[in-house]
Picture 1 (cartoon, one colour):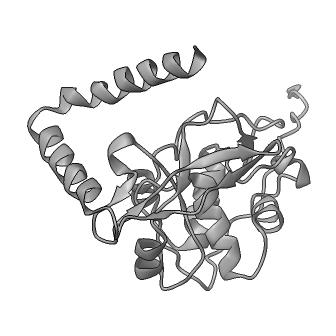
Picture 2 (cartoon, rainbow, N blue to C red):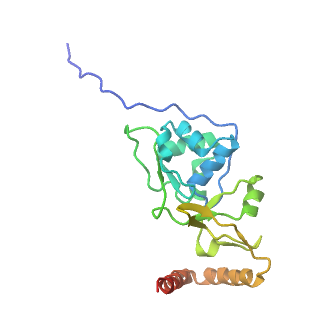
Picture 3 (cartoon, rainbow, N blue to C red):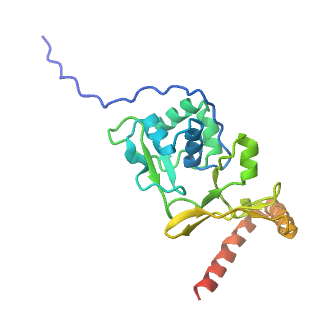
Length: 219
């Protein structure tokens, strides 16, 4: 006779993800939250309804929800989204800048996990060019992308993405500016992009200029 140790309890496992009927491609530079929101919209659901159910993490995932926030997923959650959206993870990783960032830990030690964050800990984002989004997705629902100083103007459609501003204590995307009457801004933007291609280090000039203007405003 041999004494064997009693079996150890195993952490609960989530059910295997199943492909959804809709394949949804991500947009380059899109936030995780924007992609998941567009995915939910294709099923006529809100992101706070579809994603917690898909990941089986409960309704607390989006506690303190703001539209300008971000949701971070662990490896198993990313697999579930990839399978459900019918998009390989490699494509999602290349398109979504923070797809694998700030990976949360599941409370049970295994299974899908997500974390919603907002405020200064989330990089600056705002609505991408609505005309570009509509052309690429075939739908009018806007998408939020991470905005860099040199990506806030769409030369193709002459739109200026102003980003998110806080109004009455809540984030709001300001209407995108039409530059049809300001062709010199589009021309200056094209020259700036050409300069960046030859001298990438000049991107820091915006940071310096921004710091100077902020100091003037503070005074």
